[in-house]
Length: 466
Image (cartoon, rainbow, N blue to C red; front, side, top):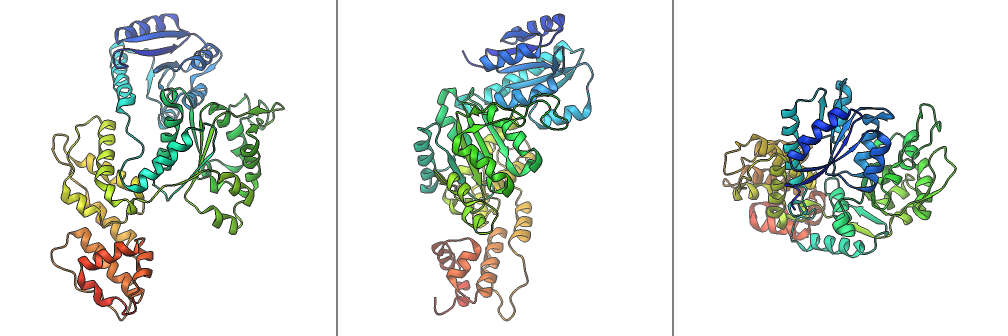
């Protein structure tokens, strides 16, 4: 039976009358309802089964939903969680919502409002169904197919460590999630996927965040804290921007990677991690070692099975596929019909090098979608924003003295005009050197030659030795 017709729900509340009332509404909405009256019982329930929806009371006899929520979210990230409280706090609601909470309701809960909330939850579940989940790797170019092939190869070895390299915005987290789905198949929804953005963790809390801590391990540690390694047990632990871990902490990570053993801060018992570790960075590990910011032995330990994610500017043949795929995802997010992308708009995007890669393209499409009337058949592309980005990210510096760009043709689009002027200025600054110009612009030699063939006016500044 489809998840939109039937879903599993866990009610966690010590108020018997409340669970009876909400349980009836859940059943009327097509849900199978389980009830727990304490955090201890709830923890046992979620360890045995992955629920589609959890209705969680904040005030329970043995703890708070606020403290339990991070553990629940890490263990089952696809679960929809709704917090119920009799004493709402704005700061608490904001923090929970930022960390993925679906909704935050105040007691007494209105029955109609609760039923409407369940309908919204069912829509979210429908978008999470396997046949509606977008593929993480969009495109048909040889480069993206090579990435997919490498991930498919390593997915057969569930404990093999993987390193993802690529510029900011190339989709390293999406590739890690894609690998997670390939590895665990139909069990991917229940196998935990836990991500840590390494630079966001204060150095003094890094060990406790990764390995957990026992009660009293440090000032303010009033209870045992589960670490991300434990939360990712039998699943995937994703260490993003791993090259930015402070040098003094790298030995602790190295020991864990080598032995797969860890010990919570303040604890005495050693635990073993059974799962996959995926690390990612936008930096050159060799350069980090050379600069003294990374241990050489850590570089060797990370570099076991390395996958390079190409920048968007090297996959312009996939621009249509990627843009349409991203737009479909965004329309699912905002529950809107999918407008068509105009071919002229896509052509206008091709000369832009997208320094922010796929993330920048997604941001452009999202801005454009929000500015487009939901009833419109075509997307109104926010090209003014793109031209502003071109001005600030591409056309920096003064025009080289003594040499002026060639006169541009009159029939260029605004984006082509920007590209034409940028190539002309860079050719001038590099004394007409094609290879140096291509390298500075982030283009291949052949890509720049194609543009020179397209715009013969630019060839007047090319060095005769080229």
